[in-house]
Amino acid sequence: MGVTMSLFGDGLDAAVQKAFTRPAPRSAPAQMRYLVKQLGGTRAVARMLRISQRTVERYVKNQIRKPRPDLAARLEHEVRKRWQPQIRARARRRAATTDGIVLDTRARLGYTAPIGSTDQDRVRHLTVALPPQYAARLFTAQEQGAGDQELKEIAAEALKEVYFQDHGRRAGSLEEVRFTDIEHLEFGL
Image 1 (cartoon, rainbow, N blue to C red):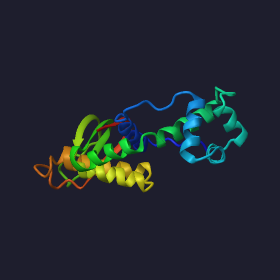
Image 2: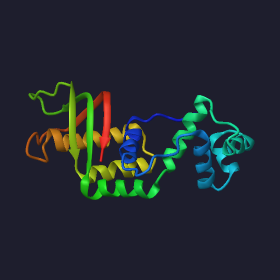
Image 3: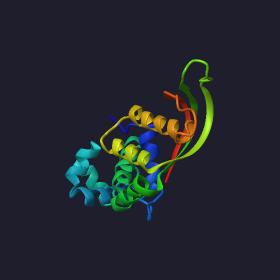
Image 4: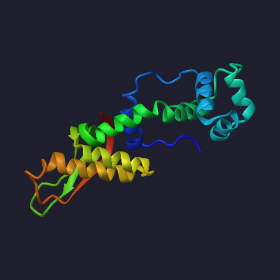
C-alpha cells in the first residue's frame, strides 16, 4: 500500500507543520518509541506499520536503528501525522477564523467566461492570500478525507474570487477557473 502522495493534502500538512514548536523525533528508535506511547503498545504500532511486533520491540530497545526505505517513509509519515496535535489544531483554527492561508503556485490557469473575452490558459506564478473561509473549507475537506481533486476545486474557486474577480470588483461574469499542470504548490499560514 505505502504512503500516498497528495499534492494539496501534503501541502496543507506542511504549512501546519511549520507552526510546530519542537522538532519531531528523527531517529527510527525514537519515532518507534513515540508511536508506541501514542498508540498504547507495540502490537498496535506493528499492525499500523505492517511489521512484526518483535521488530517494533527491537526498534524500541535500540537493537535496530536503520529501517528499510519503505518502512522509514511510513514511520516518518505516521509520526508527523500525530506530532503536536494541539499546536496543529491551533494553527488550523487560526487560519480558518482570522489569518487565512497563503497559496503560492506555479500552474496553468485559465477560466471559462462569456464569448469575446480572453480566457486562454497560461502558466502563471501566483502568491495569493486566501481569506479564512477558504482555509476553513480546505482544512474541513481534508479532515473529511477529500482527495486532491476536491481540494484543487476549492483552491480554484478561491483563486477565482480573490485573484481573478478581486472580491467582486471585476470579471463578474467569470464562470469557472481551470487550475491544471501544477509545477509548484505551497501553502503558508
